[in-house]
Image (cartoon, rainbow, N blue to C red):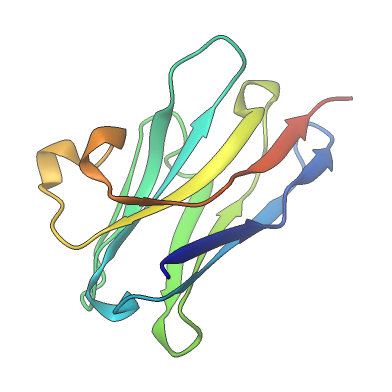
Length: 126
């Protein structure tokens, strides 16, 4: 059974940091691109970061560039999202997603990913 399990969300003040983790199982993790998405209430799900397989090249949405860092440890089948200098607009449910064939032009489109986690809530508020 394919599973992606996120953890690490919580409540943090503006300017604070969080590190999210996404643990994969049931598939060949090393061969999959992994993306982080978020969804705020009333808004569409948006991609924020993506990491390639063995390279591993990383990609970021403009809204998080310079503040978020995505990384992976294939020995632990885990992808991380380090989030620094958090802003209230970063609030939302964060999901990780995986797919074996992601076209770079579509890496931030949710429809391009086959496997999804259940999400973890991130709230940035004073």
